[in-house]
Image (cartoon, rainbow, N blue to C red; front, side, top):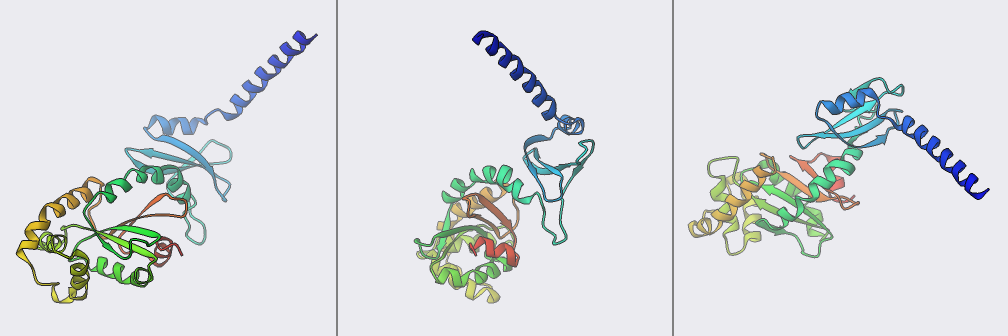
Amino acid sequence: MKISCYLTLLGLTAVLSNFAYAEEKTPEVIEFIQKQGLEIVDTFETEAGLTGYATQVNGRAITVYLTPDKKYALIGNLINAQGKDLGADAVQRLISGPANEKIWPLLASSNWVADGKDTAPRVIYTFTDPNCPYCHKFRAAVADDIEAGKVQLRHIMVGIIRQDSPSKAANILGSSDPVKTLLQHHTMLDKGGIKQDQQAIKNGFPAVNINTALLRDLGYSATPTNFYKDENGQVVIVQGMPRAEALKKMLGK
């Protein structure tokens, strides 16, 4: 009797497994997308009633949305009336965050200037060109939080905007007090920056070249390019001068 019941349960389990497999079978349109080279990382649900697919190809994240009848797929951004990208959080959680996590140690080991207290609970790495007006605006936007000890801005000095950018960056990194020199440069930016010290430039050039190579190796070519960790500990990248909402998130507000 026990053996008979056991065999019956095995048979029922097999039927249920086959049924589950049939239910979970990949839709044909998604199979087609996979054949085009898109790697499916995971799925997610949306408030629009569409199933989202977080995919990537050649390191680029792409969102795909499956219609309820599972016959059609939409590729691209899905937004609501407020302009919110319904796939952005999923892409950050499933693709961008894990990928960006590998970047953080590279930033930490680069040549940066610590602008703010070492005890600050929030760290932001920012690639800074001495001639970049948006780098100056970004620093001004977070000045209060730096002064309050809430944020440490770590400037990774690069030289990419103008011909004299490398020497100006080297002048800051190679000085005896890089933090003081950087802040003085910011206050004198409208006058072309601080006076150049040839010995400081000589000292700082190798570090600037390494930083600039790092920026390009990461696939970026503009400043500021900013990196911070969100409330979940995931690394987030913000290119350019952050908009108000993005800046609030960067500062943990």
